[in-house]
Image (cartoon, rainbow, N blue to C red; front, side, top):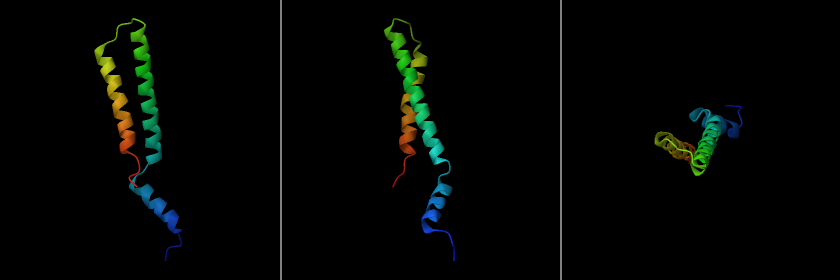
Length: 78
């Protein structure tokens, strides 16, 4: 017989199946915030009359789509 609490055992089993889930969530949130902030800065520069390179804008837009999508896909399925 195991002397481990069933709740602790369940939590440890879940952590072993998806390691570093909390760290990944924090990173996805930080990367998403950075991407949206970068896009905001680019839009404000464009609004002030500066010229934007299309490649940089596409990279920012892709990051604004990719990181929240990864955060959504990394959520608990329960």
